[in-house]
Length: 417
Image 1: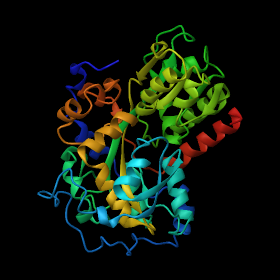
Image 2: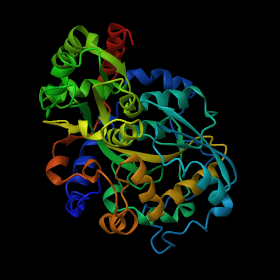
Image 3: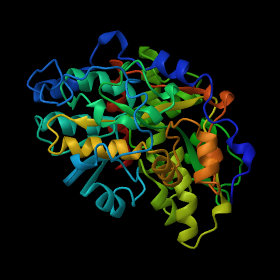
Image 4: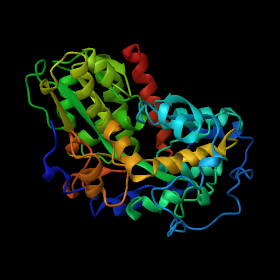
């Protein structure tokens, strides 16, 4: 199952930064109504916490140039005790949040998971700065409102010298131009995964996915449990930008997904790889890394991975970038910085990539893969070329997000989920 070298020739598409930064912003500066509760839970604060040790460090994202690359010894003495991370499911190599973290950084890690950015924000906001989490991993467009409401604190970039290892294409995005609050963890996309022994037609588009869920796979399909993705599936299939605020588009989306589609859904599952290996679904909407892990888990469960096929949804789909941030009120902010810095060591980053299956944004990725992970499998599910990236749309946070969340909730009620 090793990748051919030709699969690694297109690792950082030229259009990535332009596409990502152009679309990823808090549109019009308008906070969505659905986050009114969050603002209240934060005590109405309009600024990030002032307790961070980084408040006096406002240097730009490239200020670490010249510091030791691939070395975490500068901050190793900062870490100790328990480090709590709140992140997406199965998003780090277990070694890196387990034995290696303990032996290298002298920390015991506690990891909890969320299914959507909305879940993350609600959890942090309702805690009033006492969530108990140190590291959180939001998707880029959500960062401005998290800064505004004081949910994350400034990074002390002097404790993250390995930020120098990140390719400039994945720094200085519009949501955090100086990387004062965030640094790239991974970027990826959305598609679906299906069992060719149970589905007779070859599938290539989002309309194929919808038709199959309502046909051969009715009652045996799953969708991502996040409102933008769930509704995005319908928008993409109908050649509508998923950031639409047009009332007619939203009405049509709700009418179809709630009244016609929801009854066919078996589960709203943001991490379907485990259930796929158990045979729970014959088709599942999935982020590319989780779908890649499904191949491994199906084989481990005694199944035949070759029976399954990954599809990058078309004609359009999602482009996202998740980011490491330090939560406001983090009990162990020093250890959080040390761990982030350690994960930006190139060899550690590639170890993580080999597990979770998402591009980690390191410099000289082709050479790193050749040196560190020459037997990397399913590289075509991690690295995307310019033509593929051109079909991907980055989410914009607009007032329509409330409506999308309502559509998801109504669909769950209709599906009985």
